[in-house]
Length: 351
Image 1 (cartoon, one colour):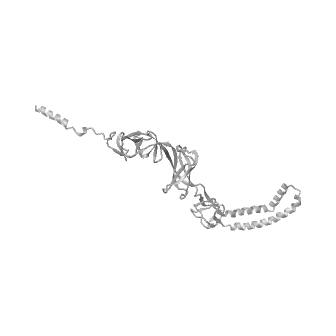
Image 2: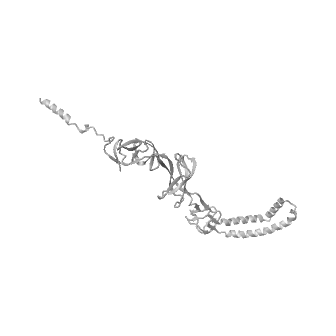
């Protein structure tokens, strides 16, 4: 009897003394359709005009820009340059010393006077012989006499000197802003030296490139915004030109004209946003979309419960995302507290 009792006792210990490692772990995942109420905010979706934005970056460029080069040698006698100064077309900016040209002009005047006398004398000696000749023959003789007396060359030399005098007064080729000044007052300048740069500060553009998939939605005249990266200011612009070639990277170059460029300067780096109006479609704020296993999901509010909806996404304008499939007009999508929701979770719409 004693042996039996010991065996029975050990058998009872074997049943009642098993360790915790044998207990089944509780599933920590949130149960589908949790009864704990979650407060949510909603947004009712209806078809509306979806504004899609195409972004790009580039540099601010002027419509006209010219590096002004010295056309002759000489010392500067007048200096009217200042960086950032706005000048008018034809305004004299630099003057060169013309004393050598003035002396040559006096010499050429004397040559013209002397050659003219010889020319008139030779004409008189030929007058009787030329009366019976045709006009064509007479004109040819007159031209030959004028050349042989040196009068033709003297007149050409005078025109060259007058052109040099005109070029000695360097004028602005067009209205614009002065930049990149390379010379100083009274400096001796050689032909071909770079003097300064001038550009049209009132007509500025931004050149950027966009994806070829977006170019079919862009038209000349569409509105855009330009924002320099140096500050938060924004400038209205319009699409002014589209280059009809796709480059090897799959990009198309477009040009945006700034409508009021005051405050911008050439060479600024800026970001462009082109607004593309689309047809009416369903769209939701970006915060309504959650990703589950790599798929886009939107929760809708229906009779106090959250409903799980797989959706197909369209274009993204930074604020809203176009919904191609998965939602119906009039449904209420959940915007907040949606990251941990499950299908049929109990929710309460925020007042």
